Length: 176
Image 1: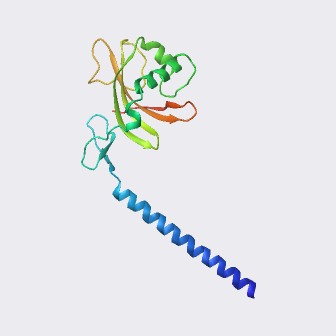
Image 2: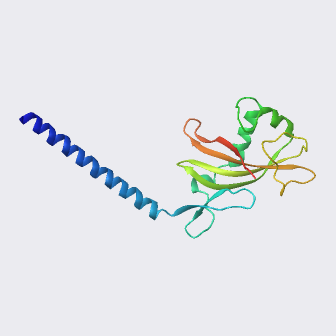
Image 3: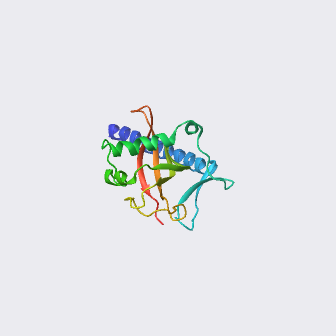
């Protein structure tokens, strides 16, 4: 009997300590959520219905300091060139698409939000001089002209320890 009593005391004490630690962790998590300096809100754009990260005072989120000196355009071009050179494969933009683009250029890059630690989202406008080019999704009607097509895509950029720099992790179409 004495042994089972000791084991019961150890088991119940451990259980109570675990519950206390979970409660303290949950309390810290809630506190962090309330006092965070960024609040993600839904901004229903008439075009896309996209989510934009905003600060507490409603301004657009500012690009983190570590990204301000990074050549994001170079990272994106390097990724697109690796698809064209058939080094990389992508489900959104294929080799056959880029081959039809001709001498494309990146016209605008807009920081959107931090997805997770060291993983960021950018909205990128790509100008394509070939009117018959194959593109992922729809062209951006507002920015396209008679001379070129503009497509808008979301590029997810991550800080990679493997390549000691930033890389494209994912490309998403902008619906709308």
